[in-house]
Image (tube, rainbow, N blue to C red; front, side, top):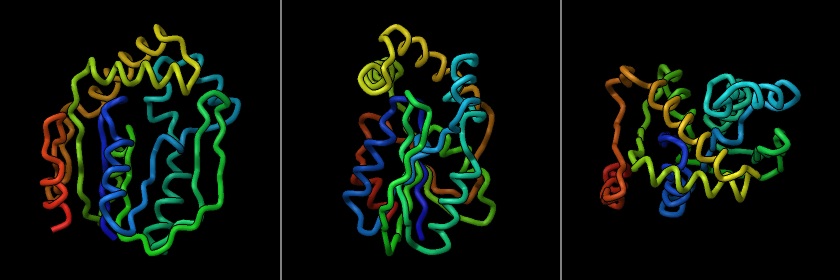
Length: 198
């Protein structure tokens, strides 16, 4: 199974890119880290007390994500689809069987962190490098429409998340045997796909 990791700051277009790849390839599945935040009272409390909570590793349910990831790798199929509700701080899990998975696309702000835990697997890594103001515009609109945030709060939360994301990976290199591509607004993505699937 070929693994493709897509990382980038909030609003850089990770979800959109993962869906574009999924449309162009056969037997691919997208696993979004956005659907694996922690739930319950602690999550509700921490999200109010800790600035940028949803951009910090403390918010990510690593064990649940690892469980689903390992199942897909070992069996070549997936039995469910998780979805996180940011207002209720809950995860819904619907039955959705996907078989014969040849490409697993992992996208989200925790994709790079999770990829660094894989010791024996090779993968392709796509890093989105998009203008800060463009990302902020996308996030502000999304958080206003989908997450019930006021636009000023969405903007301030974005600026915090931007700093957290780039400080997290400052001076941290990736494994040498990884194929890494930088994706910008002007990247010829069809050409990147040819390199990935050649």
